[in-house]
Image (cartoon, rainbow, N blue to C red):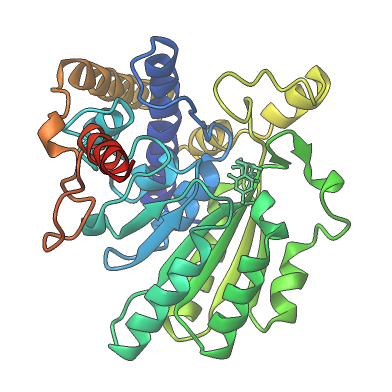
Length: 342
Ligand SMILES: Cc1ncc(C[n+]2csc(CCOP(=O)(O)OP(=O)(O)O)c2C)c(N)n1
């Protein structure tokens, strides 16, 4: 059992993630978000909160298309995150990354990646660098169960095991890759066995129970820091569709109802009350303050400035590279060359 402060902390993190996601969904529906897709992690908060609580400030990580919660749990500022998703200049990537491409080196976020499995090999590189420079840091890859069927995961786990890298692979198994249920994608759902076969430490955890996730992550991050890479699978349920507009026609209302009963936020709340660690009143005022925080992040985003066209190529190419020629000018040049030839 974790301490009072730890469980309360985990609850606060999960509640902030859920409330952020509810608000970012509102941003999307009001057509204030940049880009056409938005992937919410409601139901998966136990994975983000539990693993990130076991990480240290100097550690790095990568995420994929469903990474808002992980970045928040690592200490991201909701205003800058919301502004990024809104495509505003005040966002983490000055509005050029959006929901699926947020990165921030100051918080160790090596990048969100829209390619399933694309963020996994980066942590092997980061881990190799930490090992060579004797830095007391680990790098953690967060990905979905869809990535368990991608070859890059096995190349990455193999190298990490072979070179004893300070790396942790975290599969957030929300049971679905887009509209395909995991048992329709593989016969082998004991993912831990696959990682063990390559020589990694491996644990399968229940994402409804954030304390269980935290305790397993603590053991695995400690071992990884000592040069024994690890893998953990966190089983949970994606409460809503793959993207914000997906109505999940591929699963029944009964399955959704049963899945939503596996609610990590509700379970942590119940435990806090059952163990008399806090009161209903205190939790209500905590929840209210979080709603207010996230409401303000929407307001912040609505009032934030649009990026300037002149900033389009900043932070995209190395400073030493000339800015690319504008498309219109290039077309004119190419067409003029063609006319001269005839
Ligand atoms: C290599 C690759 N294949 C297919 C896609 C299309 N795609 C985007 S998200 C997704 C589902 C991924 O499922 P999972 O990895 O379990 O993550 P989840 O959406 O459940 O968080 C797919 C197939 C992609 N982005 N990249």
